Length: 109
Image (cartoon, rainbow, N blue to C red):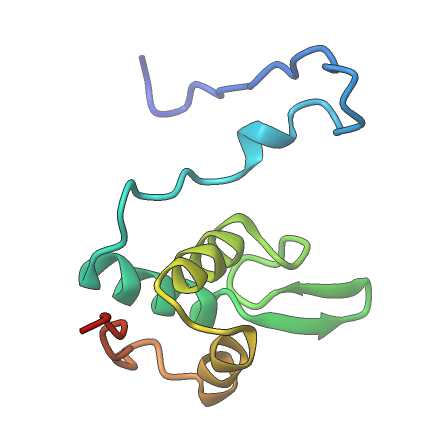
């Protein structure tokens, strides 16, 4: 298959659950358990794919797709699984450092 071949994903028929068809295909799957490496990738994803106001609304700063883009949603979900609260994730985005280190999660004694 050549690199110029376009790939299309056909939308599945609606399951009747009220979800728009094809919504499941749009999100990147989460890792089975979140490692330190996953956390660093997630920090990079939320910082690089941060929101930006544009004439057409809020878009992804990296690829101009509607915000939140797939990678930003994935990064946010991974960081939430790692134990970060929404305010902590927002602070990471505000800081703008894609190499920021997230401390390991607290473990019960």
